[in-house]
Each structure stands twice: as C-alpha cells, then as structure tokens.
Length: 220
Image (cartoon, rainbow, N blue to C red; front, side, top):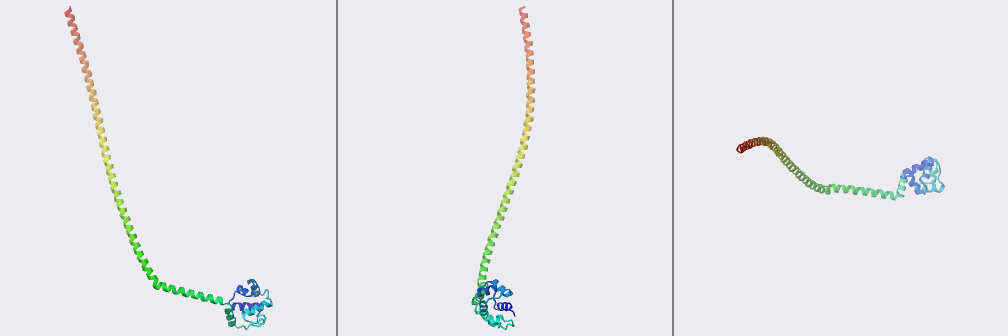
C-alpha cells in the first residue's frame, strides 16, 4: 500500500478530518490533501510527526507492503489525544438527558396544571364573548325597533302632511270658487247700481223739465 493510501486509511480510522490533521501537524488542509492525492510527499520531520499522531513507525508509513496496523490502537490513541471531543460528546449527552427529563416532568406535573388553568381562562373568555355578543344582539334589536318606530312615525307624519295638503287644496279651491262667485255678484250689483243711477238721472231730468215747464207757464 502506498503512503498516500496509508495516510487516508490512518486518518479516517482516527476519525480526523484533513483540517484537524493539518492542525496537529501545523500545516494547511491543502497540504494534507496533496499528500493524500500523491501529488507531494511530506518531509522527514513531518513523517515523524505523522507517525507519532497515529502511533506507528516511519517504516510502516513509507513501506510498500500491506499495513498491519492495529486499528484499535490507532483509535485509542486518537481518542486519548482528543480529550476535547470526548468531553464535548459527554456534555451533549448530558444536555440531551436533562432535556428529556425536563420534558417528562413538564408533561407529568406542570402541563396538567397549565392545561386546567388555560381551560378555566378559555371558559371565562368564552362566557365573556357570549355575553358581549348577546349584548350586541340586544343593542341591534333595540336599534332596529327604534328605527321601525321612527319609520312608522315618519310614515304617519307623511300621511298627515298629505291629508293637510289635500285639505289645503280643497280649501283653496273653495275660496277661489267662492271668491269668483262673490266677484260675479259684486259685478252684478255694480251693474244694477249703475242702471238705478241712470234711471234716477232720467227721472231727475224729467222732473227738472216738468218744473221748468210749470215755472214758464206761471210766468206767462
């Protein structure tokens, strides 16, 4: 097995990424990638560091024969050299356990009390809403009744106005007819008076002529 293949195998068994291995060797991830692709070969000092990281000899790294590396030994060494990862896993497991216990306590003890409390609040709110809706409906009915009363009153007033208007028109026509009759009567009486005046004038004239004739007869 070639060096680049051994490096890939050792890194994966140790559970390291190219970036993590580069950090341990004080090189970049790109340098590790070139080693694994077979584009470049690390210097002797880096080979020594690599052998220390994975717990193997330099000869085992550069030998072309099949690698007889103990996988468990490599994994144990990687774990021992990465206590931070192990602690992180323990913290995560502890957080998950606390979270699960919290959920169990919540649903076992707290949730029923909260549920009953919210149920009481919901019932109270429902009663308030029903009372409010009932009050609104009563207000609407009262307003509708008042509107109907006003409408009926306005209709009655309109009918009264129409009746008064008809009475006024009838009175107006009556007065007009009576006035016309009175005017005709006045004209007729005026004509009669004129005729009587003419008759009186004629009679006065005849009387004056008779008096004059009698005076002349006496004088003769």
